Amino acid sequence: MARSLISGMHGLALAFGLCLSWVSPSCVLGDCLCGSTCSCGPDCVCGLLPPNLPPIGQWKHEPILRKNQNALTSEERRAFIEAVKTLKKTIRPGGVISIYDEYVQAHIEAMMNQAAHEGPALLPWHRAFIRAFELDLQAVNPRVALPYWDFSVDNSPQSAMWADDFMGGNGDPADNYAVASGPFRKGRWILRFAGPHLRRDFGNRRAPTLPRTDQVLAAFLIDQYDDDPWSPDSDITRSFRNYLEGWHHPSGEPEMHNRVHAWIGGSMLLMSSPNEPAFFPLHANLDRIWGQWQDIYGFAYEPIKGARPGHNLRDEMQPFGVTPEDVLDYRALGYRYDTDP
Image 1 (cartoon, rainbow, N blue to C red):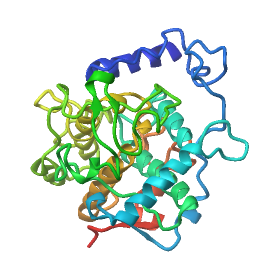
Image 2 (tube, rainbow, N blue to C red):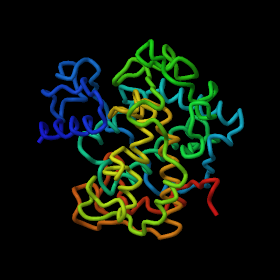
Image 3 (cartoon, rainbow, N blue to C red):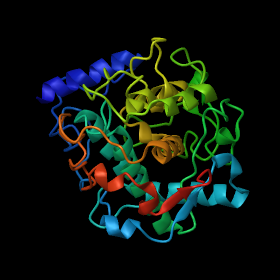
């Protein structure tokens, strides 16, 4: 079982042309993130199953507003970055890695056990994931909300997203694409997993451009959330989820979610992609698009059963302890978007 999962991860890597050399063929799922003698190397850690969400009833407090990153005030940008950096250096009571790195670890595990990608749970799993992260940010500063990045509009390396007071700029090709500017630059943002530095390669050969506005709008023509076989092979003309995820596009290129990961390149190409703080504004935008689709078609979700475990409507999503059904109404979870009606 573990060996087949590792093989599957390498298949995913090959689909993107990625390098996952840190995943040793001799690793097994039970020890790849645990123990100093683990065959994956010294970066393995043992810790609590992260992140530990509060009971879902506690999500439903006074709603916060998620804004477009290009509309943030200079103070809002500063507060968001400072809260992110605080999570990077804070360890929960009883924990062994930073709160921020718990999210990186959780995403790695989700990639390994196929809990959050290549199936219907893509969108609800990431909705829970980024909401949990946002709640941790708000524990640092209750005025902070996750911004979203509309990649179809702010679609160049010169956009506000990549300013020195926000995400910082591109990687340096002369230094293995290590990020050289901004708050997450080399020497300031140290990676525990697949490190030590954050890397970016904007507009590389895998994805020279970001998705266009017309491609985003085409998603709203699909009136079905997902379609049999509930996988990367689901017909993108009948599966909103797979269209938004981006598998098997007729162009042969990765599209939408996958394309944005590929366009950023570097650290965003790995299972440890939340190492890249831009991961969170990206997924907030995907969540916003899903929310707009739900405003048109309602809280439709397929399947009730028939997909692999973790992806059916009432399956528990690990490590959150909630189901896709629990998170279908994002407004009930305590946040809004500035594009809401």
